[in-house]
Image: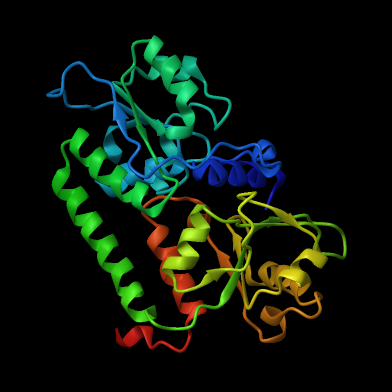
Length: 317
């Protein structure tokens, strides 16, 4: 993972996510704000009958919601980190997470900008420019689902939103039923690490009360890290040994090629006296969706459930 991507990833997840935009220094030091409640949705508009046709998305997760609802054709601006689905390639970029290009936004003449709850200052600035703003919360599964419903209402694609939500909720429930009553392995989710030569370096993991912590629980596991002080604490190799997780899952959004993945996995195997390593329960999750808290969270949840509970015949369900 590149240094830039790691910073971007850590920050959106922290504030989460999640913003799906990420820059983490303040949060890694424990100074981040509390996770906003699920359903923190607001829309300032003077005419509820107005049909929005020129939309700007300020987070990858929001962009994915828009395209999932069939509204991708209305999107006229996105961040440089919005690269899914492939159709986003030709859309105008309006900056990143902390460097919003207001001139590009104004030039695009949007009738609606959708952003995350963490973007409160950006939202206030856009409102001052007379631009309609909608804020959604993607810090939890409930927040993602609520945002799909809300965006569906605002864009008048309620049927598509209802269909998507029904599918997501059905698949979450399927996992809940399958793992109910089973033992919960202690899981450590790694979302980034230092790339020191010949060693694994510091490891950034999911703390409590965050997006990954919720996914661990929904997948039938228990977060091995129980301290609620930090959302994304950094552990040394010695810290990992003390934590001694039964399962380790590392998120690799930017790593391509089996050989490179194997090289990164090999560094983990140099850590002694960790149950997950000794029992070969180390899993490398590859793909951009593993760090974007949008509709594709279900892919990550299903993948996690399968590695936490390999004893379940998932194909037969």
